[in-house]
Amino acid sequence: MARKGYDGVVLAAPVTVPYARFSTRPAQWWAGKALAALAQASGLSHRDFDGFSLASFSMAPDSAIGLTQHFGLSPRFLDFLPLGGVAGVAGLRRAARLVQAGDADVVACIAADTNAPQSFRQGLENFSRFSQDAVYPYGAGGPNVSFALIAQAYMAETGLTRADIGRLAVAQRANALKNPAALMKKPLSLDDYLNSRPIAPPIHLFDCVMPCAGAEGFLVMREDTARAQGLRFVRLTAAIERHNGYPDDPVMLRGGWQRDVADLWAMAGVAPGAVDLVQTYDDYPVISAMQFADLGFCTPKGLPEFLNAHDFTVTGDLPHNTSGGQLSAGQAGCAGGHIGLVENIRQLTGAAGARQVPGAQRALAMGFGMINFDRGLGSGAVVLEAA
Image 1: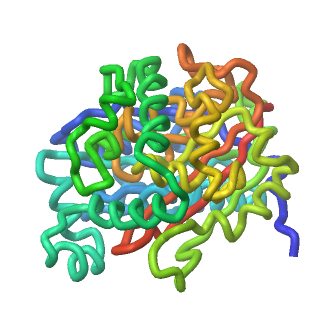
Image 2: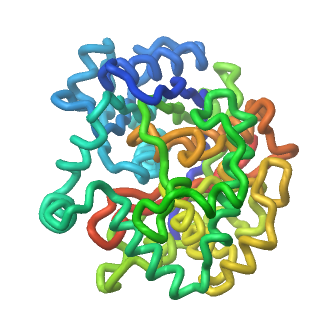
């Protein structure tokens, strides 16, 4: 059965609560700041948001329903999605269908997490049963070792080298230098990347994100609502989501995007080469490379040639992670799954400032998350178009 489109559904009011490397403020504070920013950006009272979608790892003991009383919300749709990097795509797809069906008029999609000293380590200790049973007992703390196994296998399969993958990290840092909110402020050369200290080879220092506190958000509504409010908006033309896409693969050599990529481009009515910019989920640059292959920009074995043939800066021929992405702007927990969507809304409405991609009309954003021992389970992708 052909997938139904998202006719009439738009995204508006992209907001970012500026990131902080560490914060003693709880995740509830960061979510509240995002909610207030959405109200200010839209000209609507937060009480007019009749849908509330929240993604967070650090909101305990609260969840989305508890925050409705804290924030004075009375939504008729509520969603709590602690799905990490795929939460943005997942929340958007659910919100879009509700708006399309008339079950909600304006849905606030927010991701917020805090990062107190030691809280990242504590979160990793309790991230999943896989981490408790199959990672920590072997002396591996956090996701770096798991991603090292994936990277080793994927690089052997595709012929990728660290120099190939490093082109993405270097370009993202150049983009981040045009983003005043990015945490990373120093230029990064390919030599810097290649000579950085090993963490879990082939993962080195500049393959890793900087955990931080922060929040991202946007509104989902019908086009007539956005026009009535005088809001700049973008149209949702295609979206896919898949979890545990290839359970029989012995290690992750492809993501769930590959199972649904034909549907994505059929819904969008275009081919990969028709997008003006791309936001991959960049917890590690090797995973960004995998997304380019799985989304149809090249074959897996064609990745080395593809990565060396393109300029991924905002002034290049294929702008990628134009805010700097998580590798250079920071990873604020679940907000890492929203940063690409928020950036694409800014780019397609001409609100990206010094990092604006000239004439951007169509943009792709991916989501990826919830690493277990040998694979990330969640994957998603969204195509947005300028109005």
